[in-house]
Length: 111
Image (tube, rainbow, N blue to C red; front, side, top):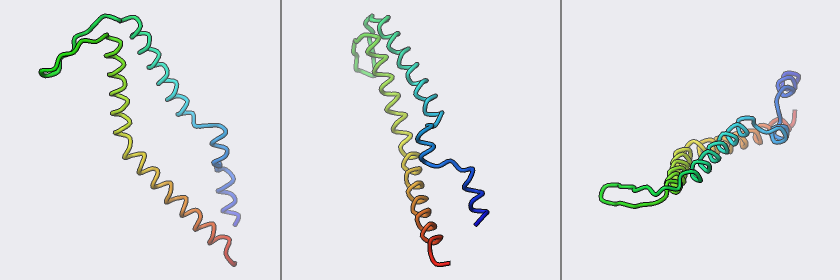
């Protein structure tokens, strides 16, 4: 029992993590905000029309619109490619929560 108490003492609980937050989330959000800010500045300063050609298709739009669509397409690709990893982590977390409940039930059983 004392070994269990020692290992749990230094562990951070879920409520403590929710209060303090993960620093990587703040860094990621800050970098995303800076990229969005740079795109907005570049978009307002470059209103010249640009001709876009792809195979036989040709279209003309402003450079800021091209930047916006390129950023949105890049974000969509990143989101799509991260789905398998997120689903694996979600399944793993569900499995681990189930294991914790099972072990808690075993620990609360008759001694």
